[in-house]
Image (cartoon, rainbow, N blue to C red):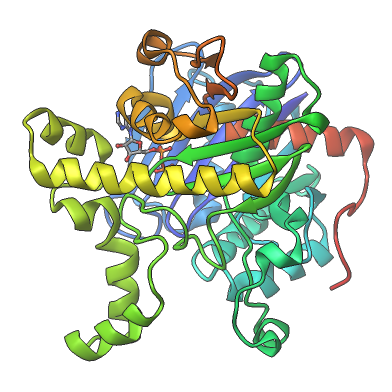
Length: 408
Ligand code: ADP
């Protein structure tokens, strides 16, 4: 069964075609700078190197059209005709309180995505554009929505409510939603597989550390808390985002620096985090290179970052009354043994003991803790596209129409 996975941003479309009988990637790529100058289409089929076309891509429909043409291209294609595609899985950012699992996309689901635009103004409209483009170009192929927020809908009210007037939650739905749910769910299931233990009897803390980063407490397979909040700005110190700060800083900064709301949002989202603290870069590789040269600001920045991750892990071990497994994933979590080591060193009192050699040289999913460590610590590469394709296949085979969709 061939499944096309689509991940639309406001000016980009990421895609992957998978053969789900073997869980094999047939082709993948990215359309960038849609609607502006410098449009670029990258396509990598499994059997040959990447092909890049540079041309103006007016809108999302044209981008999806290019994807379909490449997939069935006589020279570069991986299928004879697009009729070979049996389902499309869309990554959707926000499903608010309406969506608690993946759903087959119909009019009601589109309405929910539209309603949740208020909560994800950059992402949900782009997701809808992708859905519309696929509908127009492949009207007979069923589509599934896999939501970043859905996994966190099991977080209990005492953990998702903020200490603000309850009527503001009722009026505006201001609460913790959490993000990166597709990734946290996927790596937690992989951890259970690696450990040979049932997921429904496991207390896991998953650390998705990329440019955007979050920690998630997963008890018996369900998310019970996570560090991102109402928006992806909350929680850890990230590449360019500030993470948790005293909320009074926002008003103080606006007054002192004479900032508009948009300027303040820009400072907190794009000029803060590791980038703002270090003054070097938002890319952790650059910070680590500066650390090699003993740059004091780089050292301090990494201390702040590791401390912020360690604190969340400790909180979640407490919230679950223990922690059996600790997972590191995403760009930084998978690739930086130094960051993993620094974070784990802060967690000795919780029974986290990593094996320095295993941690240093791991390249694929594996246990990196010592045999006697109370907490089994792992590096597990995330694979959100595979997770989306699996959910799409399962739903299409079962045709559980609209399971997990609360009344709109
Ligand atoms: P996102 O999807 O949020 O952009 P990724 O999961 O792709 O994030 O991770 C990107 C981040 O991972 C970047 O900040 C990058 O510096 C970091 N990263 C990737 N490879 C390494 C590495 N070898 N060492 C340290 N950091 C790395």
